[in-house]
Amino acid sequence: MSVTVLSTGLLTTVQDLGRPGHAHLGVPRSGALDQPAHRLANRLVGNPATAATLETTVLGCAVRTGRAVTVAVTGAPCAVRVDGRPAAWAAPVRVPAGALLEVGAATSGVRSYVAFAGGLAVTPVLGSRSTDLLSGLGPAPLAVGDELALGEPCGPAAGADVVASPAAPDPLLLPVLIGPRDDWFTERSLAVLTGSGYRVSPTSNRIGLRVDGPPLERAREGELPSEGMVLGSVQVPPDGRPVVFLADHPTTGGYPVIGVIPAAALPAAAQATPGTPVRFTAVRRRR
Amino acid sequence: MSTRVLRVGLDALLVELDDADETAAFHAELQRRRAASVLPPVAEVVPAERTVLLDGVADPDALAAELTGWCVPPLRATTDETVTVPVRYDGADLAEVAALWGVAEDEVARIHSATEFRVAFSGFAPGFGYLTGLPERYRVPRRAVPRPAVPAGSIALAGPYTGAYPRSSPGGWQLIGHTDTVLWDPSRERAALFSPGTRVRFVIEGA
Image (cartoon, rainbow over all chains, first blue to last red; front, side, top):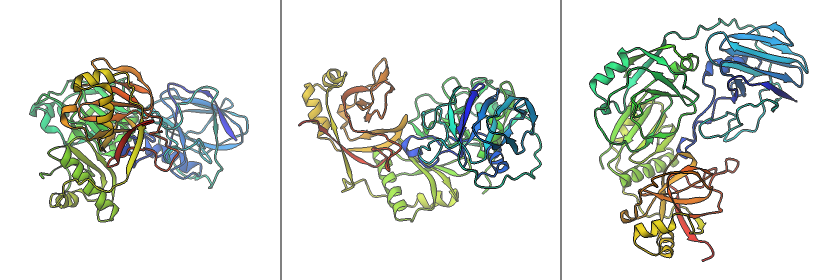
């Protein structure tokens, strides 16, 4: 059985834990941007964390379910409705066969996650069902009329979780481990990065969180030979405005990386709405 | 060989080498050690022009200390598996490349197909390999104006590299030919025909 897509909001994609391990072939890791929310949604409906969910963007989505199925909506808080009746957010919800499931616009944050018991059974590519917006691997972003197959439910729903509605990050706090290419920037640039008011740019996407604010000044001219990039890299293109690499980031890049945000801080970045103040803080590695 | 190791985030190392040859040799050494299970677990090994990134390293400090003490032999012409790719040398920029090289068009095909290439690294798109092997005198610049769509299977040159487009995409490389060989297919066991370290030989189709 399947679900039929009736509306897709700004952008709705299928996501799981991504396809790490193929970066040397030019394949981004991809996967849910807010992994704790993705994992929670799966747990609430009795799925393993590897099951595919829907990741919405700002405006939610709507689907009609072909069979009765337990669903859970987590991540950005939003109104959940089944055939027009209010249903619980961040809790298992029983949706009858043929019912309309509406995931409303985010009341705070950006991305909600919709898990279906059994998971979405779209065809995996390199071991993952994630949509990768950079390289086009995995299923295309959802379009109205799409039919998505559902897998077989494999475990009981975990109904007992009490989930506090997360506040959207404000300000967004991003700890930065300085380097590897901090020597490409002036001393002053490091102070500017950690001492200035940046804001989340509306041009942010699954590839990177872009910020508006003072540009960072290079200490040297020329081009850096292309090198491998990690999740959370703070790459600085020629315009001097830092970009924080998220799950669909390119595997190599030629602009210098001034620092790296640890992965644990990135789910918050995925939920920061445009205009949110961003504070970068330099942190030291524990040895 | 001078090996500089830079820390990247919490659990990655960026190993910086002096030139492309040292980078290739170091990457080959990593592959040998990984195959022999004497390298501590690493989630990703990503070679590039002058660096190799090791991501997802359990104890980066220990590995960083170990790496700098390695004795890395220069890259040998080995008996590694070689992938053979038939090419029709009829690319849209063949005449321009011939002019840049100062040879006839069929001579471009002869020189290119007589070269042993090695995939130095991948990037740009899944399965797009950057192949080295052509002598320095055959370097060509990128096109001044990139094409909005380069056909899948195009064999092309830019700087020191030969590349092959796994699928149609925009591109600024100089097109010298075309192959029908499928370069990227995520449904097969080996998704990318060209992965870093693979030896490649192009042969003139029908010759």
